[in-house]
Length: 225
Length: 225
DNA sequence: CGCGCCATTGACACGAGTCAAGACGCGTGG
DNA sequence: CCACGCGTCTTGACTCGTGTCAATGGCGCG
Image (cartoon, rainbow over all chains, first blue to last red; front, side):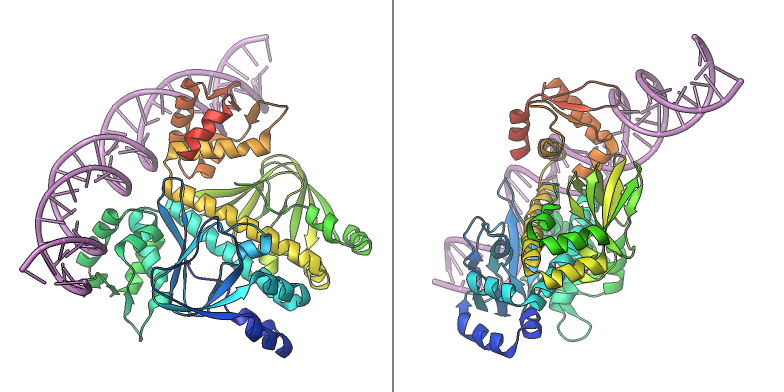
């Protein structure tokens, strides 16, 4: 959950050597700073992006201005392609969580590839369907689970993004970002984290509030209630 | 919102006459009764369906057993194709809200069409992307709006499904189904409806609880808060 | 050294879920 | 034709989770 279903493997797996060569030519590497917006809601989609290095969050802003994060992107993830495919404006925004390196794929080139390469199309369809599954889970979770359960669920799934080394998982997201992932507010999130800390399930080491997962199994159990 | 992005137009628009002829042969018409399940979570996807007549709800069951409706299908809608595309089990369930007539499309045939017809692929990609947009809206709404706002939002968007005649919109969903659409419980939904009735925004005529929308504009305003 | 951002905590109010009971209409069967 | 029973809708009382507002603490950066 909260994980990209489509990565750059899509291209490395599906493109012919000739297409890959053209891919090199048509795409552009961009270096961008933490907190920069890659694109934003209602913007025109000139193309899409692969995250070569760094991390990003994808979010949508609700009517009241509150943001809801629905995906975290890691190295290799492809994002921002939906409006290219259906020829609309961006329904969401992308912001970098770290200094990052991006590969920009122009819309016209992506469409050209898809039109000429059916394998790529099929792989894309498959990826979009998996993304759909993920969204179903997210939506059901947000609609039905308590904040405590949502926090546990989110922390648990963040394992996939931030496992450094073997056992320990440290999560460098800000409290505000975590709250936006869980569909709650900062204060409530902090309280839940406080409780989980007392229950020895997580710990926070430094002052920045980086979270260490101590007992992933217990976390998973709390998430699945 | 809550509307299918992909309809049978996909096939009528993209298939060649020859393919359409084969489509006739490979597909099967099914007649099913209200409340029957077309498919259910974790089931194997033998194919997908077009709703020729009737209505259906698509939903996912959360960990606790509560159901969350995420889409209503009307005449012409295509559904149940995601697991065909990514070769997994159904992540959701489909239940008929009326006696209905379905067209069954075998998985292998759909895949064959997609592989041989790039236009179909591209149209499908576009449809899936639009579906993605819809989900973003739904998820953000569920995570951020109050129940009252959600109810107004849902009622407003149901206009598209149930406009009979010109102005009046009558909604024949059960209270339980409406609650499952709004991400709340029956009792809370009823109370909100009660209030909206007092405010002259809706009215309920018959004993079955069919809802009539009296003031769609006011409803829209309340939804957008 | 001090300003400012972020995390944390407290007090408080209110929205929304749960439990329980009643109303209402419909269909079935006597 | 009427009565009973079942399912759905409705309402009430109550509790508790969660959001809001406000203040404090801690650390880093200029």
